[in-house]
Structure formats: structure tokens, C-alpha cells
Image (cartoon, rainbow, N blue to C red; front, side):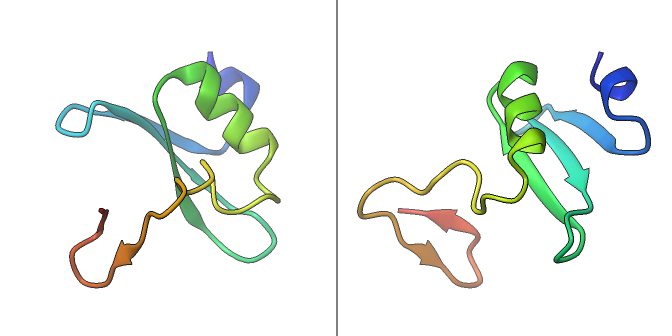
Length: 70
């Protein structure tokens, strides 16, 4: 379904993360988008201009070099 709606983009389900992923080319350059399900991934692609997706939780901080929020 995603491939038909957005031809040329790359999609996959992360078996370790349990999340859906897409590699999208917004004007600022290629980036990864993560979502809980295909419907949320569709919304993230449509709203690619609004970064980050999803919006960070209140109080969350990105830990450089570790790649996770705490």
C-alpha cells in the first residue's frame, strides 16, 4: 500500500524496533522517518515539512552518540 501511494520511497518494518520506517527526500535532504504503524507513517510522509516527526515528548532530550531519548 505504501509503495503504491509513494512510489520511489523506501519502506520497511524494523523487526527489532517494532516500528515502520521510510527514507524520504524532503527539500533539506534525505532522512529517516519512524512511525508505530503504516497509517502514522503515511501522515509523517505527508507532513514531511514539519520536522521532527513525531514531535518530541515534553522534557525528552536526545543523547548524542547513544541514539535514544530519555
